[in-house]
Image (tube, rainbow, N blue to C red; front, side, top):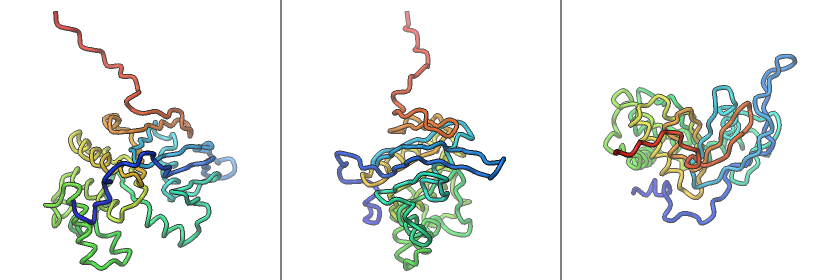
Length: 258
């Protein structure tokens, strides 16, 4: 494995997973006066490292709002999020931006790749923005692309890649600065079953790092098998906290042949 991406997978798992994300009393309201709407109702949850956590629930239940607050894209109306021991309420202005740039990676349903850049150049963008020398940034990007199975597609442009390959480039871009928190909003929604499975297998392998927290928001029931933990939301609250394997399978058993 290239040295640049050696940290994507640990040499040995930590015996006790650390808490990467701690939410305390997270509430969120939008609007004002008579139009004020509360979409999150005092959420308390700890999410550990070294496991893949799935956040599920119907549209409008607050999943995207919660994940946006955890990732620092939105401020809560009340409560606080602590990421890897750092309360986000204590960070202001450039300190908060810098913390997020160093510690958080994002993967979305839409790949958001720049069409005029190659796969390696797209992955290198966060490093170039951080003013890393271009040659070193491209070399590091190439190492991460190799780790996600696209080492032979470094010079391909987005329109020369399949949907699944583009999503893997997007994941590589999110991982290139080795974030401790990776948040994924519907990463398989636009993919066929095979591509979706490949992407989830990749995220599963990334999530085993003992110092990384991976959270996937999804409506896709096909990916439940990949989760180590499932948090189900309804009406702005977490109503179920379990592991996907413990969810009853109501598929009828095949009748024995006579």
